[in-house]
Length: 500
Image (cartoon, rainbow, N blue to C red; front, side, top):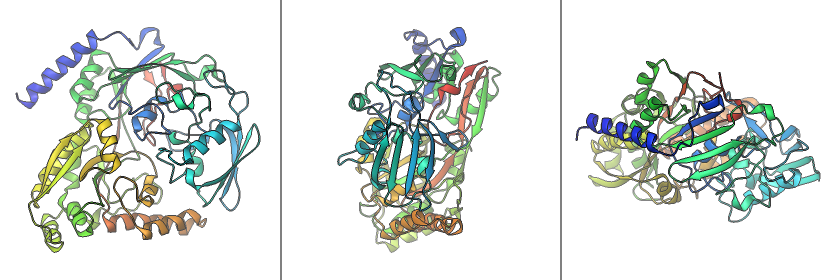
């Protein structure tokens, strides 16, 4: 079956499936409902404080679950469950004044004890919160002088702390319902969790008890899980999905731009698309081998061939939108002969057989084929292993892999490189020292210098092969307003959406 014919059959089959499926949406009915395309199903559940998948935040963050602060589409930070906050001059203590009269969906009152519970849970032994080591372990004490005040004292200063409090790892849960968050999240947001039809859809409905009833014109939101690129396009064209805020296959862009029913917006992201390398495994524990992999990859060819040109090359684990970004792409230019020489210098006998584990997104599956072809030219034979998202999280993300392709979407997540237990296994005292100095420095000029040093350290160590920063592609029906043009974090703030 040819590729073109296969895609055509997939599209027809997907459209038929959509039409035959239970009518969980009909998004424009009464201009009060919306259906959102979701590329990956949240796994293993809907609790962003215990699981790492970015897709969890796409559903629940700001909609069902809220934190002390809010990160907006432009990256600014504003109050949410906190009305205000202030930082002590030494950068080690933050006092948050909380909103009063706020309730959880089950009627429980929100106050400072919920913040204390949530953060102690996040930093407890055995916590699987992905920000445990980088954010919550840095909180040395939590004080609650009254129901509307929380004082967080840090072991080391963190000028980004208000931003961290707006990420989905820092949402506030109630002690009575926290344990059930993965299957039935209960929060303080404008939407309640209704139903999760595994493999198909997640449904939220507007909560009439929200503190600002006018904040959410949309009454019902259905997240349809559609991973196949052809099926994504079919769903949009059939009217079964109103928007793909992010993640849709870039090959659909030109087709959708030509359709007057839709608006296609190209925005920025905090994403870092990488060939992840297991630094613990031989021969990848040799920096020369990792540098060889970097020289073997033609970033421009990857971006043009896999992302349809909708991305820019990167040379470290930082996005061009980060303040203080340094362009290090010149450190490892595409040079197959240099790659071969480095492998030889490291004593690696070729062909070197490795496994390239690929999660479902198109950039990974299609990108894996492209990268495997590039690696083959320098003597590295990559056997492709396609896995589902839950398998990637349960295996690769636990450190069981050789190589993988993944887009790290969290902003300013370079602190993961300070954690030797993180899945790529990087253990560098030099990097940890730089990160510590950066966190404790208040001088703006020195912080900027150290920020550049952090980037250069990762590039020099070639921890991973840094490839691309993707553009955000948001495709929506023309009448749907409020969808974020940019993705500083993976969230869909439904409270700002409306039909016009």
